Length: 97
Image 1 (cartoon, rainbow, N blue to C red):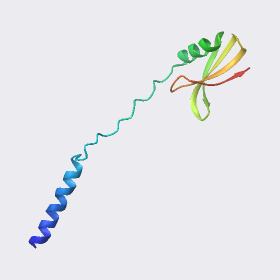
Image 2: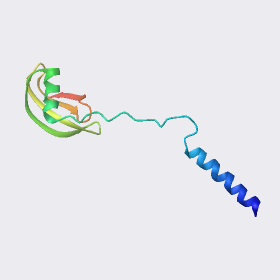
Image 3: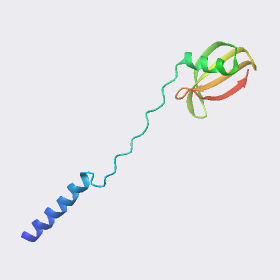
């Protein structure tokens, strides 16, 4: 009976030592997600890149991710639609209207 108790005690001690973070490795921390982009900021991003005047902004999906579809008139490319990602403000695509 003493042998069983000793084996259990040793095993419990090993488990507790492993839980104490004895490896010296810190948990990997993920960077915070990029800020959400507002519709107004998406319009600014589109016009900073192409010029022109925003006439409409609506939610959309581009390449499977949430985006803002920004309609712009009088840009350097004429009348265009620019998809700006809602997560990071990246221009995902642009097409002439």
